Length: 333
Image (cartoon, rainbow, N blue to C red):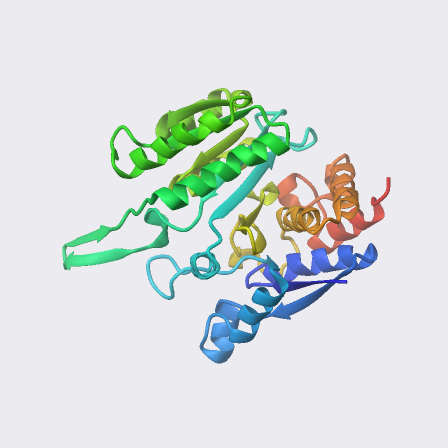
């Protein structure tokens, strides 16, 4: 039996968490979830964002599954997602984007993976006040952090028969920070002669991904670009509701959907649990439960053959609970 720390989050989090738990229970997957409140839900109850008990649970289990949690825009508490990444030094955010032929989108053959450095750059939110009329944000890039995410991307490409790794940057303007990231990429690529490598300035990368996405495979980049570009890749496959992810290092892994907590549709039984379920499948792969992961993925793909049986955002008519049951009914077909 494997133990996994579970955060059901807030907004639509409890609903999509329930979907995952139902499907896992149906398959008798040998996992015991240790469930904890986190974020806004816990803050409303106890005035804290994360409990020491849940932190200890992650340290013990090494693996967590986390539903979306709300982060106020422009005020309130600092992003707990960012805090967790820094707390456990989860330097790699990996976001695979794969299209489904049944889901309406502009492309039918997308199979990209974004490797996003997860612990520095502008995204960590280090800001300073100069005056009431001037503020600055700190962009931090280090050789160590750059090296380990780039090396991980190449290792992933090698192990998964991927043919190409692309570095995304803005080194033409940010010559020191992004220049360092690109320098490390150019150094490391020499160790992987069997893999095609190139680099793109981030604005050009966004254009190329829209015009010729089939030319790209694995992409690696600093934190902020990774957040933006991975959302772009979700648009190539039909939206954030289909994009799973993991934040990880060599010891810990926290799996989560990329989308937010969507409080406007919470408790309406209309949320799409697919991205969170696919994140849970990534977790099963990580834990060596590949057979169970593939059964769930195949059931999702089979369910997509009848879009009416999917949630509204996927073009269907089903509620969250109905869609979950449809996936369960399609396991093994």
